[in-house]
Length: 168
Image (cartoon, rainbow, N blue to C red; front, side):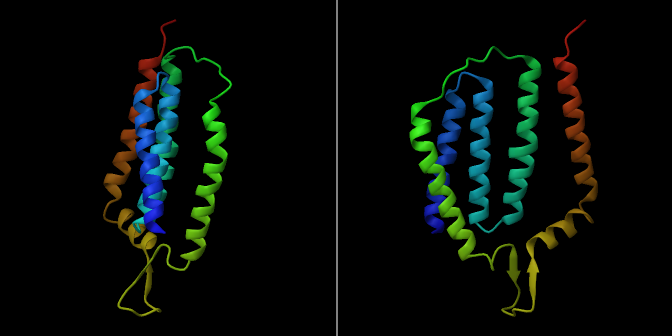
């Protein structure tokens, strides 16, 4: 089952990356990048890195993509064409989304006891959550780089707003 997930989302990541390169409109490119980020999150999850998968969705597919779209809108990169959509997207999109949802639901329900935990020494009473270990490390010994990164992101947002500002 993990092989099927890997193949499906690996192909989705490659297709999204190729679509990103061949799009003419920046908003469509940003949406293709969201597909790549979400596919990478599923690949991370299938490799057992649940925290990295969640961070991929929250940080990259969420915050960074909102920032990209915000900058594209501020720069007024062109006029968007209004179309009725692709017929291939309507034909393949709904059954494809349903198939991916069914596959993910099956894998999640089958492996729900093993998600996010690491068993130490074969003892069932000695189960440690990956999230607990990572958060403890992040907010104790790595607190300064974590906060410096947040300030760097804030400065980048302010710089994008200043660069995109039009003179009155």
